[in-house]
Image (cartoon, rainbow, N blue to C red; front, side):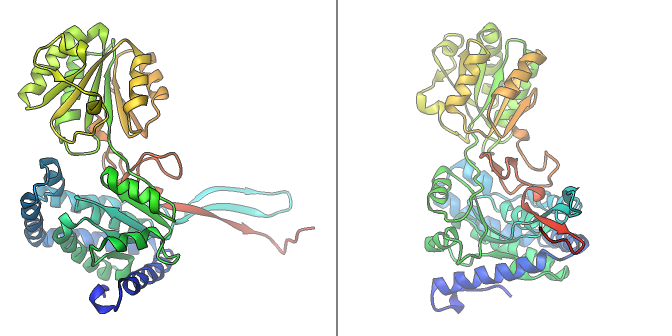
Length: 427
């Protein structure tokens, strides 16, 4: 049964009980069979489909509230749940259910001369705290990935999606019961009190093993500053597409149009296009024509604006901003070194792409850009766990340790060493 803050005398008591319940559930999840987890996940997907109308009705309350609060169009798009998006959520849970179980796999094994046999085995992390904003699908993605990887998860969603998150959580708990798994394996905090976030960041008296933030700069900065447990951070998607001198320009226009305008509010959207000066005079007017027809505002440097009067002036702030809107920055570069320097200066280490027919140039870009995802002749909007074959992602990690890029179930594990002897003693 879900825990409710009203049943406790203080917030501290409530949060402590949430942490202890999650730790107990994690011990159960670590030992259940892959089939039992699969059964629960398939049940979750089934209940989501059966509950689609009530989920959509709950979401309508959130969208109405967000509109009244004056949230941006990009934020409302992230919040919105259509019938197709709800079906997509159910399908992603099914995809996760059908994945190979990431727990218990032998990563390495060897034997020492003294006869000891070593096995490095994947195991769950334990209890994950997820703090996120806007996107109610994250509630389900995080729950499904943690169930598949044998972790308990404590979810703290944003106030703008509270009704949607609760509707999804009801479906998740129905699925957990159908799979005979503890409901406390997935808990959505029943309070929006900011003090609850602080308690999560301090680890709930040792109950939380890792925090994953997913949201804007302010949220991620607070988590990284205040957390007393490890953090797997998902930072801004300040992404670039570089149109190399060797690019097929028709391909480049198509790819950039998709990378910017498919969905402008997702973290994989391109924010800046870098154009090699060799092809700029031919390419930029084509790009302005295509994106202008799609309703995109272009902001460029002095050199790009000299080629097309329809381009507005870009400021230094523009190049350092994740617009999450139909706004695209343009800059003309003098070659690969210039492009790499621009990305190193303004990029967020998330996703960057090159459009080029020159394989050597592409290889140099792939090696030289220090981002979690680097693409050749493909849209940056492929920065998505589902597109990587992970079913979904709990976030896109832009750091260098533990996991990087889309974080799927297989990345929510750590390892331990199982050592077997035969009465072996150390001399």
